[in-house]
Amino acid sequence: MSISIWIIPAIILLILLTATYKRVPTYEKFVEGGKEGIDIAISLLPFLIGMMVSIAIFRASGAMEAFITLVKPLTVLLGMPEEILPLALVRPLSGTAALGMTSELIKTYGPDSFIGYLASVMQGSTDTTFYILTVYFGAVGIKKMGDALKVGLAADMIGIIASIIVVTILFS
Image 1 (cartoon, rainbow, N blue to C red):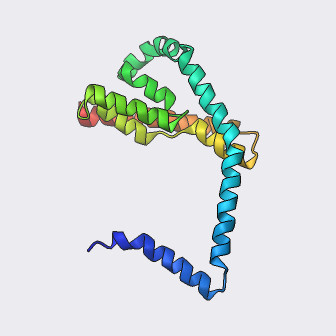
Image 2 (cartoon, rainbow, N blue to C red; image 1 turned 60 degrees about the vertical axis):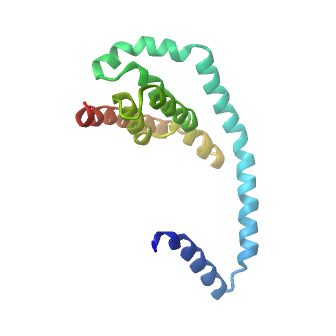
């Protein structure tokens, strides 16, 4: 029998036993936490809707295709297939959209292709920078996020470049 099956239930039991020992009203605290979670979710809705509309406008307007055409010489220089560029552009915006693109690339080119490997590694090496800034910074009321944006986008760029280098070394 694997211990991994019992770790989470054991942690939950330990928390409940400790709370009971310290006479903390666990059920009431659980309900309070649930109420706070709902309040936070409701406060995040405007930020999420704004971000989703912006992504849809960016893609539907043809701006993404225009940008891909513009930077194609750079991608060739970096050894990055142009098919992967939309994933690199969308990943900082939306994890769900990026996952959909990764799935489509894997379905089209195969999981054992260079593009399949690169899409998979890139998906795991970058983050949803704009989503994080929009949702989490918006939820706590942080208005000045310029430095965090610069650092997040730099980390995404490093993740993209590193994934290209690693996949090229390991799978070419």
